[in-house]
Length: 107
Length: 114
Image (spheres, chains in turn green, yellow):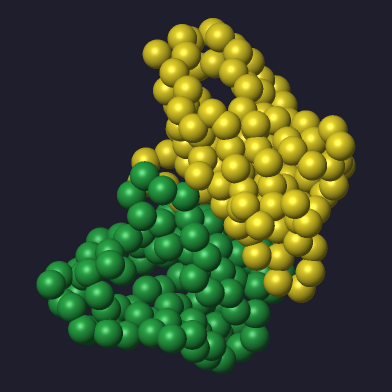
């Protein structure tokens, strides 16, 4: 069992819609979680981190953490074609990354 | 702040050759990480340093791989006797040791072993 698992996708949404990306983790020792965006051929870039239960909002992005259920999610509101990328969920515990979810926003 | 830099950006080598990659972290960051990423996968942790000390090493890392960070600044990753399966993107990241420990990634070194 992988430490961090993501819904494999690919995910396609129309422009302006909400994109929902999910991630589950197995190690209860994990404290902080990160969402990275990775464009094809590029390195990951940080979007958000979250370490408290509940929601954290930053512009069009909202991260949600539920430690009891061991899942983390990322919502992207008003999706834009420039959001098309692979989104990686990562746990700070043991530096685990998920395999990523490919998102395509259709104009 | 010039960000994390890696050199070379691309490397093509023949099977059996040794290769060495360099990573220069963000200057005030005391932690440095190496990852390997293949197509369709997330970054796979290899090793990390706090200052000059190598604190953790993935059990997946064979003895052909070695990493150093001699003065707690830049780091090198060496692969000896390369194999075709070593072909991947090698990513370096750095972070500052605080509650957040956000890792900032370099552009990566793409290795192709022929």
